[in-house]
Image 1 (cartoon, helix red, strand yellow):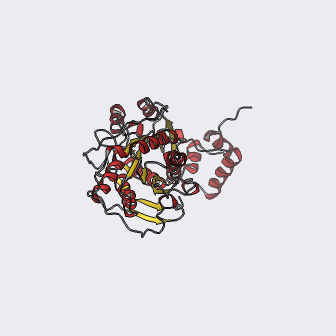
Image 2 (spheres, rainbow, N blue to C red; image 1 turned 90 degrees about the horizontal axis):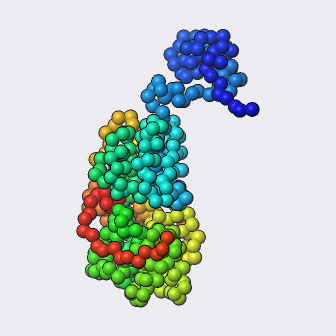
Image 3 (cartoon, rainbow, N blue to C red; image 1 turned 180 degrees about the horizontal axis):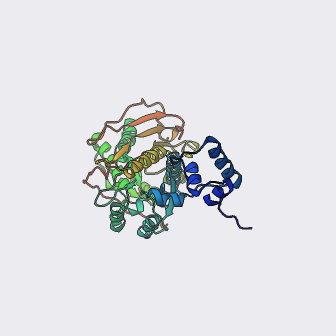
Length: 386
């Protein structure tokens, strides 16, 4: 037999009171009834299995207490950590989360946002870097409901919460330089992504700071997957056989980098040191254990949801991106566990943001190969470096 919801009218009839009285007692309204009557209404509601109708309540309050999350591939470890933390944070504040997942191509961003808006979400949280060049999506995020994004929004006007990826990449590369490396390659994500360009800038900054001029031969593009990263590593070794260190743009790609180095007979870290990004839960269990920049995915989600809820409440959004610090977790893959801890220099703009060094365990929390070479870029906007 199909289940049905118990209405408040049924509760009122069973308790022998008016609909208005039952509604005010059960929904916390201002009503003058005796304690005995109120207790009887609550008891009847419990016995019938009554649950408040949040849809009806939202029509009265003009709020659904729901935020929309537009997401890319939620099977991605980094995004899943963010999504889980965002939902828990929203629930802690009395809000539900409605998730809209993009297609693999990411060309349905406007349709997904429209779906969320049609369901009257109070605000939208964008966690889909695939959309950072989509002008239609950017316009929708600015126009309809309060929004917060984790990625660059063309034209601005949408608060951004993220990490200082440029400063983190600089710290990781500095660490390799301090270990004595002068031929340091990098395996990047797709160069069209802002986070990739930011990390490439930080890598170049650290090299120039050490008096080493970056070489295009040492930067090879991959596509976030282990397979493309392995292919990029093989190309890097062909171009510069003397390379002794590699800065990788994600832990998932680092799996492919380590595999390619093993196949080439280049032991890590004896022949080639490796430092990566994200500090995923599996990083410390790779062989060798992977040194990685910890990106605070859970903390980012908490800050993003709290900022969105403040915007929904009418508070003015911050003018500058909110950038959280990253932390270099030193393990075996770089051969630098005994390197002295130090704090990276703060970035040139915005509030102080640091990249710190830590040794040992991870802190508690959450296609065809591309062979193009990203060229150096001089544009250094605040949002590009997030």
